[in-house]
Image 1: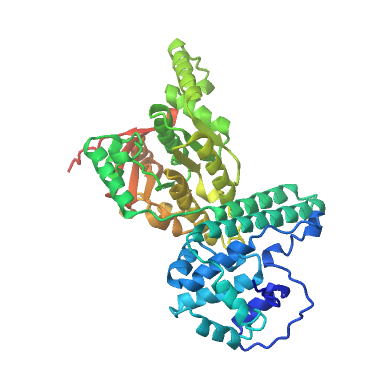
Image 2: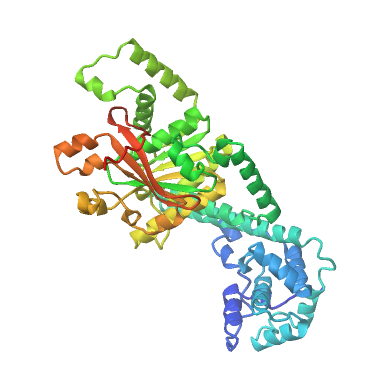
Length: 506
């Protein structure tokens, strides 16, 4: 076997500079030892007090997958790209540089053969540092068979994950010594970094058409048989179920309204039906109210008992107490999980939702509410609109990943207040009233705008006449019709119920 002698002794930054700048003739310092990929810069063995231990790597599999790419580029470079292989996955910078150039050939649809490839290396002043034609020939002929390409590729990626873990842990150890006064921030950053490693290591495969056809036929059979509104989860409101065919896996249902319209009550009514009546494990992320407040609302609404009556000196009778006892037993027995972490980040919410999906197989998530969440990415720090867009896209991606519907509450801007009165539409909301980002309406599969006309009545007489009337304006429905759903809001027990349309007197 030949060795690639000189390139291994170069820092990867120098190799990448030369690869991207063919005219460069920057001198090499052959005495400078290999620093490895940039990933390992902060993870030197001496930092881990284990100078005798090398970073995890797999030189043989790296050569094997490069050899397969050389011999059958259309097949194996494409396969590597589909499996999200990058230069950083290679331990030796020589191998990473070779893969980068192979990828360039593939993207330009140029044939990969030794003559033209060697010429490219010479044009970029890389042939000598690669060890000459003999070293390239060794890589070319290294793998006599391509049967183990995927297996070797996964080995290379696994070693990269191990190096990533070592790097992040090493940095965390250093920060734990240096930033002892910023424990919460340190913990949050470490959690995000570890989660990023997990996301990068996850394998995603395409869905076959055959499987998709079977799913569509199964959906059609269930729909025709009247089972579960065609595989969707019933909301408990027949008109909404009719328009949406139920909430389906991977969908994001945004319920938006102005303050005091009853967003939280409506969301808890949905969760009550799905979790208590349908027996589905559910999770609520409450950024505004505590778990105590949510359970209190759920308990009194379930028992149909008006908490406000207690403040007026009313003493519950036996029937009230029996209803409260029955409701409390039902809530205790249900599979409802509540997280009331304030100002939760999208990364933290995603991590908790994944864990709860594995532990309890949750089937639906409700979030109250989107604008109280935050994103810790650098791009989001200087733009609130960008931050909301990242959160919205993250929640939609989470729904697809966990294959469950996510109900997201959102705040509307002051647009409805500017349209008070009959001529202005009586304060009826529009989808353009969604606050701080147009990406919410773009990411959502269904948008419902909650509206109570009494709130915008111009006088007391109209307010009394409209009292209790509510509507959910389905402004967007990716898989069905749009329109208004009539509801009745019973303020005393914080419950929305189905209301029939009133006949037009005209």
